[in-house]
Length: 218
Ligand SMILES: [Zn+2]
Image (cartoon, rainbow, N blue to C red; front, side, top):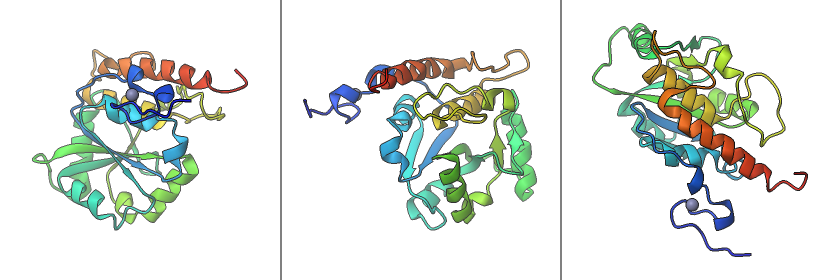
C-alpha cells in the first residue's frame, strides 16, 4: 500500500480529505480545542473543518487553563464558548445581536473592538466535559448552545452513537456559525439549509459515506 502523503492535507492518499473540503469565508474566527484522544479517532473531521474555513485554528490538549498559546490567542478576541452547559444561551437566527447582549451583560461593558471568536470543544461528551471542568478559563466565557431542532439533527455515522445531541463538532460549528452570521427573520437556519455553511455539511455527508466504505461490515 502506498504511504505517499497528499501534499495538501498531509494524509495518506487513500484517506485524503481534499475532495470533501468546501471553501468558506467565515466571519467569526473559530478555535477548536481537540482532546488528544480525538486526534487519531476523529477520522479527519476536524481537519476537514479547519481546511474548509478561512479562519480556524486547532489546538490539541485537555487542560487549557494554563495553555499559553491558547490564552495568548484568546487575548486577541472576544471569545464565546459553544458548549451546552447549564447557563448556555440557546442561539437563534440573527444570533450576533444576541451575542452582543450576552457579552455586555457578562462583564458590564461592550467589547466591540475585538473580533468575536467561537471556541469549540472536540471530544466525546465525557471528554469535552472533562476539558471544560479542568479548564477553569473556559468556564468563565460567555456560553452558547444550539437550539434542539439543530442539536438533534446530526448525520454523524462514524461513531456508533445514536442519541440526541450527538452532532459532530463540524456540524455543531457550522450550525452555530450559520445562526450567528447568516440567520435572520427572513432566513431561518434549518437542518437542511445552513446558508453558506451548507456546502460543507453536504460534503461532510459524502465524507461520512466515504469513511463508511472502509468499514469491513459495509
Ligand atoms: Zn489531501
